[in-house]
Length: 219
Length: 219
DNA sequence: GGAAATCCGTTGTATTTACAACAGAATGTG
DNA sequence: CACATTCTGTTGTAAATACAACGGATTTCC
Image (cartoon, each protein chain N blue to C red):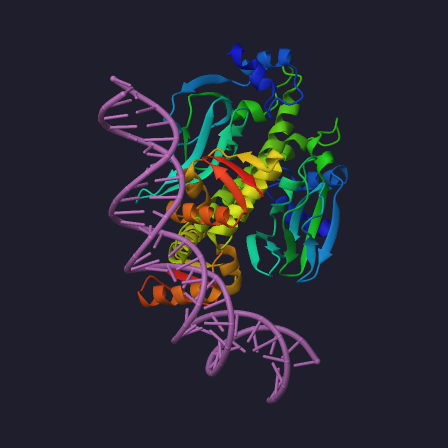
C-alpha cells in the first residue's frame, strides 16, 4: 500500500496531512487496497456500500444501464478522486449506479464509520480528514449541479457548448482533452451519438471549434 | 429565534441533539435569523456564500434563469431542510443558482467556519452536528443523482414516469402531492409545459394515472 | 503484418419536442 | 360579485432528435 502514498498525499481527502502521517492513519481508517483490470466492475448497482473509496490509480466511469441497454454515464473519476461518499452513510440505501474501470485501476476502501467517528487520540489529523471529506463531497455536489446544467439544455448544440466551455474553464485553456470518446460523451450528455456527431461536425464547419478524437479546440 | 426550536429539533442538522442543547449552540454556531416574503430572493446567482442555511419555515425553490428567460428549477426545499452547503466551502466559488421563497419563509444562517471547526469545549454536540451535516449533504447528493436520472431520460413520458414513481416511493403511497404546478414541473424536468401537459393527459386517457392540479394518483 | 474490433461520420426517415397562440377553468382581489 | 390574473389543456406547425444502417478510418491484438 506504501507505493500509493505519493498519490494519497495529493488527494483531497488527505489534503494538509503530511506523507509521514498518512501511513499510520491508513490502518486506523481501515484501509484496504484492491486492483481492477480494465472493464471490471468496482461497484455494482444495488449493492450496499459502507466505505468511502479513493481512486489511487487509473480511471473509472460511474454509469447506469437500463432495461433496454441504454447507457447513461453519470461521471468520470480520475486518480486521487473520491467516490461513493454519498452512499456510505448508514441509511443511504443501495447504489444507483455501477462503477467500472475504464483503465487498469487501484482503489482504496475506507470504512466510513472509522472515518467519520473521530478516534480518541491516535490520529492527530483525523478531524482534518473529516473536514476534507466535507469539502470533497461539496465539490462533488457542485459538479452534479454543473452536469444538471448541461443536460437540462434543450438542444444538443447547447449541451455541447455548455459542456465544452466548462471544461475549457476547468482546464484553463481553449485546447482541451476530454475523458470520453463519442459514444461515451453522448451517454454523458444524454443524447444520441450519431446526432451528436452530426452536430459537432456542423459546429466545426461553422468555425466554432476544431477537434480530432477526444481533443477539442474552442475558437 | 426560540420559537423555531421545535422545528430545528426535527432538522437533519440537529438530529440527536436535545432541544435544550440546541439553543446554547445557536450562538456558538453564529446563527442569524431572517424572514422572506413570497417571491423574494433568499440567495442570488453570483453571490458568495459562507453560511450553511436551514429553512425553518416555508418553502423555497432553487432555480436559474438564462439569458432568454428560460427557467430551470433545480430543486425544492421544505421546512427543516438544509441548503447552500455545497457553496459554503472556502474555494467553492460563486452560487450558480437563485434561491427564492415560494411561500413566506423563515431562514437560519450558520457561519460555516464555526460549524466545521469543532470548538474546544462549549458544545458537547458539535461533532455530531458535523456528522449530521456530512450525512445531509450525502443525501442531497443522492437526490441530485436521482434528478439526473429523471432528466437524462429521452422522452417526456419517461421523465414523468420516473419522477412520479420515485415520488410515490418517497411518499410511500400511490396518491401523491407534488410541490410544483405545471409550469414549475416542466421547468424541473426540463421540458416544454404544453408538451408535458399534453403527455400527461394522454397518460391519463390511457389509464396510467389520474390527477387534479398537483395531486396525482398512479394506477 | 493482417484480421478483427472499435470508432467516427454521414444520410434518410419516423418520432418527438418546442413554440406559439388560444380558450376555458380556477383562483385571487377589491 | 365582478374583474383581473393565473393556471391548465388543446391544437397545429416547424424544428430537433432518435433510430437504423452503412462505409471508411483507426486502433487493437494475435
